[in-house]
Image (cartoon, rainbow, N blue to C red; front, side, top):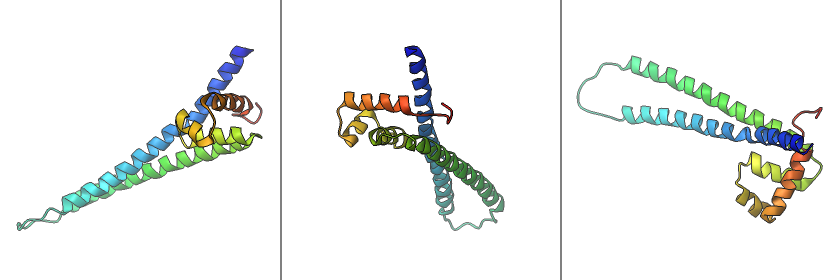
Length: 144
């Protein structure tokens, strides 16, 4: 029975941790859009006295690339927000406020255990006791 609880808790932790990579993916997508825009601006700021033809192909390539990056950015943000809402709703099903707060700080704010301890004002051992209780009470599925 103890092994079954341990296995179930590991599944719950993996589910809760699934938000953090989506945060990173959204940040990377944001950065790609910013870099693409910055690169285009810095290229177009190069001036000389020589005559040049129109740069329509370069501009259209840039627009296509930027549109793809912006679409990826929107998708990454949507995935992040969807998972956040899903996990937060599951956490809100817990009855104990300490357990709710701890899971939100750890998994939705992506804090380290040290940061969690500082924020909730409990010692390391107490935080882990609350975390273990929260995992036992946390439901991934409605029928669990």
